[in-house]
Amino acid sequence: MSDPQVVVVGHPLVKHKLTLMRRKETTTAEFRALLTEISMLLTYEATRDMKLRDEPIETPIGPTTGSVLEGKKVVVIAILRAGLGILEGMIQLIPSARVGHIGIYRNPETLEPVEYYFRVPGNLQDRDVLICDPMLATGNSAVAAVERIKKLGPASIKFVCLLGCPEGIKNFHGAHPDVPIYTGAIDERLNDHGYIVPGLGDAGDRLFGTK
Ligand code: URA
Image (tube, protein in one colour):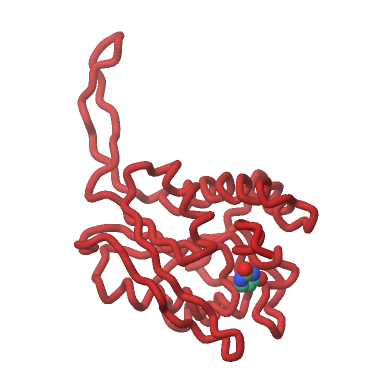
């Protein structure tokens, strides 16, 4: 895939943990812990361009100038419900992040997104937003979520997922070519039921043990 707006985080730790997550024997507890760990690695890459400012400090040995994050707090927005799994890792890494939730489910017949919940921090202007959902499958929910957030005028938007597929990426960047995608891997394809192949199954069910 030669889309410059897609960053595949191919770190060996991501590949290893993703393989453990894909295995059907992996328990809910293991899946949850792995998703949190991988999310931190994805967030590490997705926040590489965060702005810093100098800050004079005193260490026990003497004065120096350190670097601290500049500007308003980052906003992390989870697409319910599986996005909560990525959110967990993100806020462990960026504890001061503000958090929003978007509830969107796919109509099982049409695979189109239906919004049932929307609550995000006020004043998104001047804030960088990371929208997260583990599976970029059809891309319909992600497209709808980004559309909603764009209307609130944030400084920037990035989309962070665990797995994507060519169909979802094409749909997403067809609608939002300006929004970079950070993903752990790009799988082969989407099946007729809107699942990523080989994928890992239903991320929400595996995360919450609801199957
Ligand atoms: N949502 C999931 O949880 N898994 C898929 O493979 C596709 C969408």
